Image (cartoon, rainbow, N blue to C red):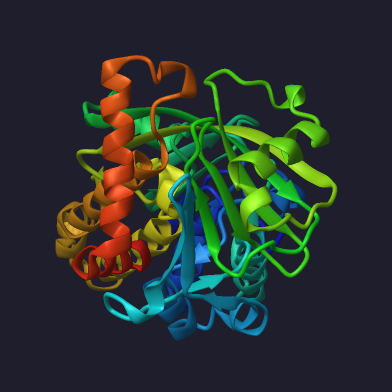
Length: 395
C-alpha cells in the first residue's frame, strides 16, 4: 500500500504502528519533507475499523487543522460542551464550555480519524506496510520483520502501543516504568442507537459506574463498571440494557434510546508512564510511551501532542543535524503527560466507589462518603468547576 520498499532499504524515520500517533507523525514528517515508512502488524481493514475514543481536545483540533488533517472531523464531527452527573442525590449538568478556558471537545469517532489520516498519508505518497509484524529494533535503527525482511531508519518512532516491541526494547535497556492499577474494569458497549441525552453522562450507583458517550447521530458508546475478569459473552443485550437502565436511573430521568449491540469488550483501567520516552535512534509516542486509563478520554490527545513534538524534533535532527529537540523531548512531554494522568486518576476516584456488597464495611462507607463529597464539591463550587473544565478539555 503506497510506495513499496525493498528489504535492506534505508529511510529517514521508520514508524512502527499505524494508530493515531503513528499516522499523525507520518503526515507531519511528510509535511516537513522527511522520508518515512510505517510498519503495521494488522491489516488495513482492522486498522480502519477499530472503534475507540472519540473526544478530541481543542489543541488536537488546532494542530490537525493547521496541517491539513482535519477536513473530515470539521465536516462530520460536532462540538460538545456539556456533561451531566447522576447519583442518588439527583442530577446536575456542567456547561464546561463556559468554564475554565472556555474550550470544548470535538466528537469524532477515532476510527473515522484514523481513516482520514491514513487516506491523507497515502495521498502524500507515504509508504506503509500492513500485516507486518516487527520482531526486533536494533540500536542502529535497523527494524527486522517476522518475514525476514528489514528496513533501517536514521531514527525509529515506536507508536505500536503499550505491548509493542518498541516499548519492550526501551525497557530491556533499563528504562523504568511508573505503573498504577485502578482496580476497576469497564464493559465497553457500542450500540446502534441515537444518543439518549445531549451531554456526556456519568452515573454513580451502588451497583457501579455507568457512562453514556455520543459517537454519531446513530451510534452511542456506553460503559458499565464490572468485576475484573468479566467475560463479555456473559452480558447479553437484555442484561446490558437492564443494567444501564438501573444505573442511569431511567425511572427518574427518562428512558434510553435502545438498539442492537454492535460490540462488547472489557477494559481494565490501568495506567503507566515510562521515565524516558526515547534515546539514541528510538523514540516513543502514544500508548508506547505511556498508557492512560480511559476515564478522562486523554489517550488519543496525548498521542497527537507527542506526535507533534516528536515530528518537530526529528525534522530538526534530520534536516539540520540538531538533536536538541530530541534531547528535550521527554522533558517537554512528561509534565503534560503527568497532568493528564493526575486528572484521569482524580476522575477515576470520582466515578468509582466501593461495591454495593462492601457497604457494611467501615472503610467502604468512608470511601463512598468521600466519593459523594467530591461530587457535591463539583456541583457547588465554581472554583472546582473551573478546575474541572480546564483539565477535562486540556492536554
